[in-house]
Image (cartoon, rainbow, N blue to C red; front, side, top):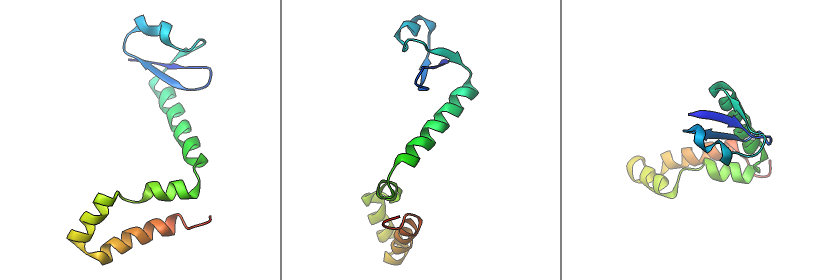
Length: 93
């Protein structure tokens, strides 16, 4: 598999060079390490663009997991899990 960087710094992967014509114009071949670095930077930029509410909502376990925790561990364990998320992402910050 070969990695390519487009002019907008997006990373594209191709299994075969016969599909290079499908890449955005101006794409250049890059190493796995460069692709990894660009992906990490993009993920960090995306995370930093989220509001506290979006980060907080994503940090909560799914409803199914929350109900499972209540059933198996009790309400107090569930409250600890939820409190940890609320502490990490307080309202209005």
